[in-house]
Image (cartoon, rainbow, N blue to C red; front, side, top):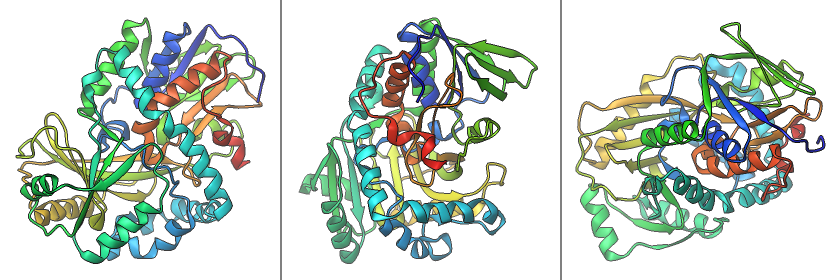
Length: 417
């Protein structure tokens, strides 16, 4: 890692939740910051997720147990894992790398690294939203996990009891909570637990608007274009698709699933894949506002009540960004919602978005050793929303020449060299 140096200005490539959190943190630290991104807000994985601040997800999905469970979790067998035949050139090499990173020793190291980052995630969100005068967007009421059969309930509870869950805790639901859940769904509830310590964003779109407004209020600027080339040995240079060439002290690549090409052009190894998720959402619902997110583990489904709508989300589809969406995913989501008896009115909107995922299921946060004017923050997989605020604080410290509160060495891209 190159020695720290002072910076006066920065360019961030990407305006998802990671990019915005980093931009605010840099601007607040006194570094004049410009966001470069296409004019396509509010459609990516930053905004189409379940709104869950999942600090209980300490154990990386790159684990021996996860890898062994893949066959029975396939979409063709009713599971959430989709490996489209047309995308085999993308997911087969990724699966091979995932197998290499799913050894017990690597899992243990990954759990320690991810746990350290997650331990700071919720306090960082509290600080960021308080600074943005938007603390009401964060609801710290935990979440429910529900099972529909005795067998899956016993196995699921035992699995959570044996798992590392960081600063969260869980207990069996009370009778009042069970009665509340039974008013929302009509399937039998064989078991249910309630987590404490996790949280929820109440309105993802509003979150994006608030963070963007805060960045601009701090003096940050936005340029609507797509970055096509970067370089940065002593000074960073960014070439855009509108033929603009920008220079700055440091450039941060935070473009989610689109981050890899910019760095691979520089000779970096970035085994990133687009892990696509799907949701259906309806504004017509009887779910009371304030109901915590409910995870239906038997269906690999999470249902979240937002300020204006209720959303059902699922699936991990490994495919290129260019692959058309699979309508069968939305059809299955609607079937799950119907089977559960959720008050999910029509018309329901449909969404697909790509999570940026690396084969060890850890993010990439750091800067290039050979071109130290280039930093990066992407690859947060299912935890992009959860880890956005703490990532922003870590990037601001690193760029400012200070020591981040969390050791970033496990997230250096050099681990894939």
